[in-house]
Image 1: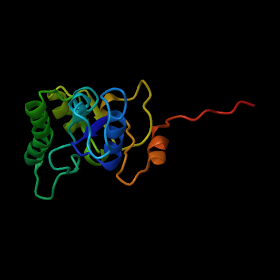
Image 2 (image 1 turned 60 degrees about the horizontal axis):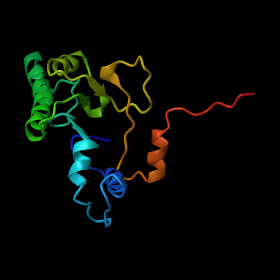
Image 3 (image 1 turned 180 degrees about the horizontal axis):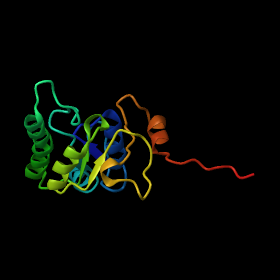
Length: 162
């Protein structure tokens, strides 16, 4: 499970409770998660950045020249990557693009930080040849119920043969 930007939506919390209620860590009463929750965090949840301010990284602001734009993009990439490294001691492997938008400048800064993957907001699966910096991901929203969540996991449907 990936939580981008560190935001835990109700569906993520429901999934965490399902994990907590599994034999992996013991049981939960439903309102709190058992003491083994730290193990879940360490083994099952990967926290990766989503930018500093959630601005569209591909668009210059009205008052930005090229140098100011590049400096803003550098901060949008660097600040959350460094925060995760400092607080969790973990490297950043992927980056969720705000609004799913990315350009060569953003990719340049991510590569300089050794980030290997970038994810958009385009739903669906990824073929083996998909560009690693433009991977599709299916968004799960707070209002999504379990059936909607399950439907978003389907990336291919069987084809009936005549």
